[in-house]
Length: 95
Image 1 (cartoon, rainbow, N blue to C red):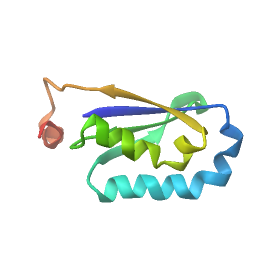
Image 2 (image 1 turned 135 degrees about the vertical axis):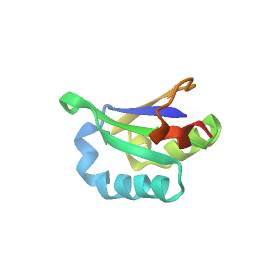
Image 3 (image 1 turned 180 degrees about the horizontal axis):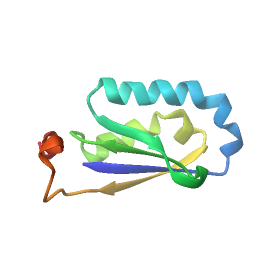
Image 4 (image 1 turned 90 degrees about the horizontal axis):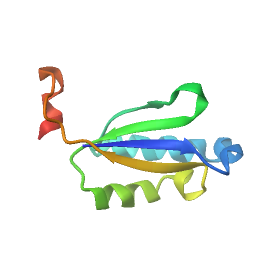
């Protein structure tokens, strides 16, 4: 499982131009069953996505297709999470 931090980058001012494409990219991630959570970071720092069932290489390729990443609206940081304990409501994340 991976936590992706999408922190605003040098072209934050272009976010409005690429917002529709970014939202479509997010929807593809949910439709593909890879994204299970997406939301904003506090203090308007950017956003975050929780991804699972995808290798780090495939996730990097997916991130490169995000217009926000491609246009440097955000800079992506991937944090790998090796869950050792999971609430039963989230047990699907361990597979």
